[in-house]
Length: 150
Image 1 (cartoon, rainbow, N blue to C red):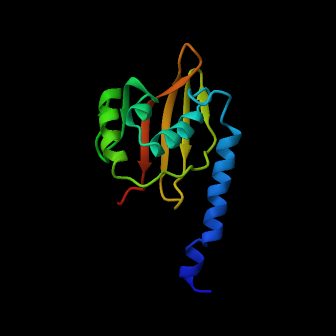
Image 2: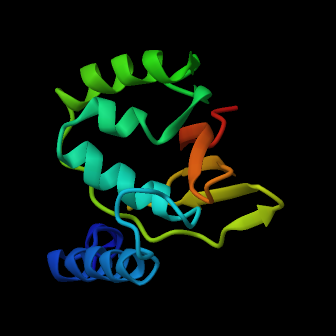
């Protein structure tokens, strides 16, 4: 077997990884599909809302003064600016696929969640804060971490 065939996952293996991620998300869904009750719900809701193409619905996952590290190398601050960014982005991106979450870290009302992208390069992370009603919203969102080039 040559190195290319071992480095490239088979379509069957890719479908299996996607199915595993979908099962992981369905197991942590929670009872309220509209609000993020568990920290991991935010990522699940992001996939659902992004794939529906609704930037306002995606932006509702962020606190009013949230910070999104996007576009790369810059920051987008505030829910309205984040909505505008997602409105442009969602018009030009393919459908998002669920990614299996890494273990969540929780300290008081703050939670750090992360997911590795399918290619295993880099990571995605977010900090969510629990609100008085028990739901959670993103405070900080880093959609892509990539290894330094130096």
